[in-house]
Image (cartoon, rainbow, N blue to C red):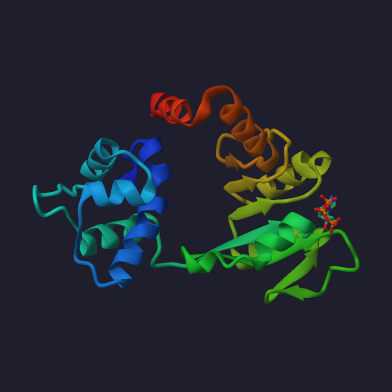
Length: 223
Ligand code: ATP
């Protein structure tokens, strides 16, 4: 993200892609303006939070008019670096990795898995969804050649840390970690952790013990 957006709180920054996707749909449908109530309904974020978030972007909604869709879109595009394609590497082309490879991230944002790595000889050298799978031995070389600084990790958990250490050495700055392993990384690196099994289990638990409304209240407190 560009330096001018650094002051946006992290909770707000996390919602940016959500807003962006919805605004793109509005724009395609030819809508020129949107109210915070409409946005709230669509992205399931309360409208007070939306108004506060948007005030950080310098977008002040006018009463009875709402927000200008074009202004917001160009702000998001710039802030999320959407003018430029961000290439991402995938490490581990198993069941989950394959699903991510086949998933078209480009449909919703300007990121693309451009290269993949594995140790399975049966997969190495083949292409999947137009992406070549290379041997792990070539990872540093290929990442440097392509200037890739973001990686998605979908290897078995016991290998996650040593691969992360190698990624750090290869100048990778961000990891989307789908493995259950908790990673230790240098201060210059950022890890976002997505543990699908834990998320599913916690959804089941919350529904069972708190019901639907209290789940929302708990999320509010986290804001
Ligand atoms: P599959 O059915 O293809 O084995 P899976 O998701 O159940 O899928 P996992 O054992 O979780 O399989 O492994 C995920 C992928 O990571 C596999 O393609 C495997 O070959 C690969 N892999 C295993 N160890 C490593 C490693 N050290 N470095 C890179 N890739 C690895």
